[in-house]
Image 1 (tube, one colour):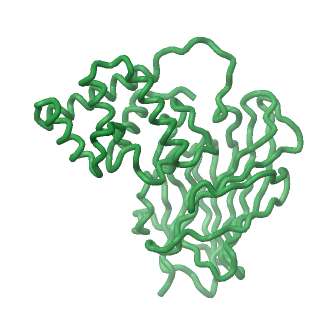
Image 2 (cartoon, rainbow, N blue to C red):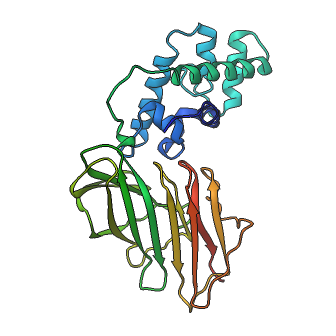
Image 3 (cartoon, rainbow, N blue to C red):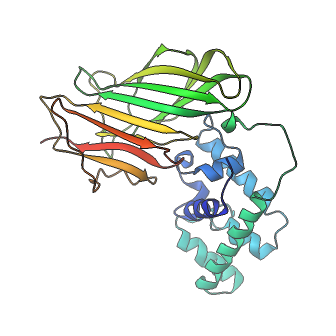
Length: 319
């Protein structure tokens, strides 16, 4: 899918905040536009993402004047001499280096980022190569989260569409929050229900699980295939009261149903939509609350969820 200059510019500005590219867990904070221009794929962990960002920026700015290049590298946390925790500190360092005010330096930062966008989106030579992120997309993602059993369990069904010929593997990932703000992420039990064979799995970070799934036969462009997995929280392990889907590639439709335990219904449930990274961390209720039906379920649908944004539900346990 084509990258818009506005989206890429917004993602670069967002990336400059905090520690920039040095942010821990950077793979959770990079948007779809940057993923596309840097060649970041689902299987890349945090350090691989950081390396691809660093290499892309270094190559793109190689021909920039020194002042413009530094006005890009320092805010992004990529200048060796400006490894400060906050963007304001890096701006102050740059202002001293260039003997200019902070406001002038911020204008230069924007101008440098704009030039970076122009380099990224310049027409490329014609090629038949297809990037891994463009091999397939999700037509339908249907999740059923069951909270009325001995342990939380979620059945996830996906219908995928091949965007090129010869697609024979699917990468599936899930990121789990810790049960409490200061707790460590837990574990997951994953079972294939139908449609694929699990041929590899890894845990590139404490919160992220990555599975490699083999299809029963290669798909050609336009062909679809459905598969299903069941994800369970191990017995005795707590689950944070949240289920949010963060699309990493194009998804045409997402539907989520949650079945609560009728003997332990939540005090409130709310819909999460178009969330940015960290928007869902503190479990603050969103404006759109959701009523439970008579059997303790909710059903929400999200047509065309955007890559890099969060969609789903959160709830407040009673008591």
